[in-house]
Image (tube, rainbow, N blue to C red; front, side):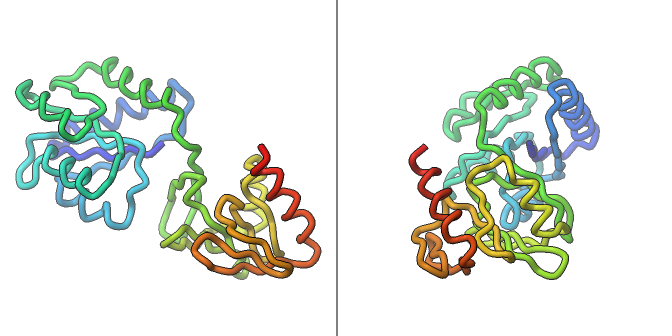
Length: 233
């Protein structure tokens, strides 16, 4: 689980982070929390990294308020869950306009925060996978992973619009994904998410956006059988 904290008070940042760590340890969940000192810094980072399961936003901040940030994200079609932290009750009705998950009033009670996180966990969001890249860790939902290509002793992971240079070999990634039936090795250099295959030809695969991947002769039967089994349930 990945959570972004947007809070301009350092003491509140640390308090929230400590509570998140405690909750994650209690629930045996891998959690990554990243703090931003204002709405502008989060909005800037959002252009390159939107893979968060929850945003915790302080409402009263200099510059762009947390409520204005939430309204902007919603206007762009982002449906990420949002938890507001505020010291003023009069802001609470405004949360309905941006479909806020919940409000916590400062000083908030730790158990109330835990209750919100429990609710979020119970919604059972799509599985996410953690990968190590040359620039650090990334967490991606399964559906966003299109395919992986071997490159020397490392590999490149492709989504619809991005690519990430991973620190692992394609064999290691294949082993990491072995419990997810969506993924199959279609070539010695390629591992593909079958949910994004639009068509299978004799020697290549066509993805949903018409990208092509090679299909080795030895993998044709295995890929066809796995593809049919996936969609037959």
